[in-house]
Image 1 (cartoon, rainbow, N blue to C red):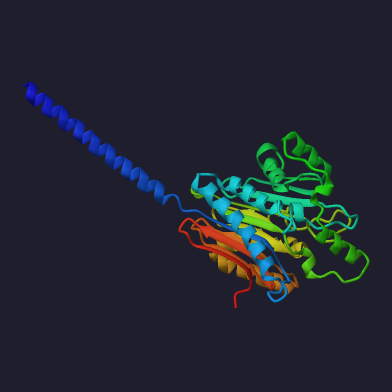
Image 2 (cartoon, rainbow, N blue to C red; image 1 turned 60 degrees about the vertical axis):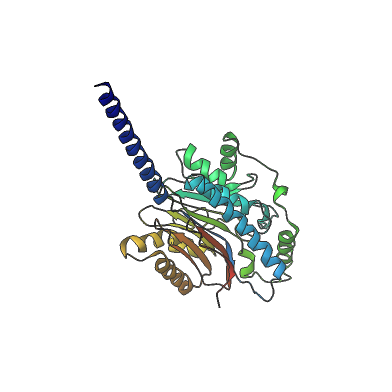
Length: 338
């Protein structure tokens, strides 16, 4: 009898171990299946020439785009949510003098730097934005704080700065944003040594993310238009124009001549084309770029859906752009493919 009991107990224990092993394997397999993620970024679209941009400068841009993508990939592998990834990836570009956002932003007519940014989550449709700020080191962080720690969506100017201080964000003097190249460009315009060109608006940065939980988020940050006056604000901080995200459709970030994007409700319209006309993200972005071109506007857009399908469309000579997927697929480019 004792021998029988021991055999029975051993059988039960072996059966329990087998069930536990099966459950563990199933859980790991299920988790692996949920790990699909992707990230797409842009660093601005505009008039640029492969012949006139040195190989060294091209490598510099690509290295910074790669740094942003690799950071995003690491965060996503570690389980970060989409909004956190959008903020930290954009920080990489805001802290670089290469782009018209944060440290490398263009100047206003009164030789100051005024910054705009926005972010939106696809799961909740929550959003946050700031505009016309002069002392917030990373405006995308302020937009994020508006989204998660206020009852509002859009703050501007001194009020946005006061809010950012209360959230403990890093504040800087306006001279922090100074770069000689941007300042010289402003002075040339003010002295009318040259006419305004589409090059003056290149450099807005943006990011759209699908995280491993199946959620989307998009964000955009910019210094706006070179030599802008009267507190001008473009599309970047306007939810539905420069930024939009909805898990039912896609996440979108735009770059270009902001007035046209606002008039088109550009980013939201792409979402609508996906939702109501059943277009894929590439078709929807292409259609919206067609509308932009028809109006006489220039620029580009990035987008991503919950199946990790990515679009990077523009009607200019180039757009600083790149993406990376959990599958390992990756691309970084500047000019139009020949």
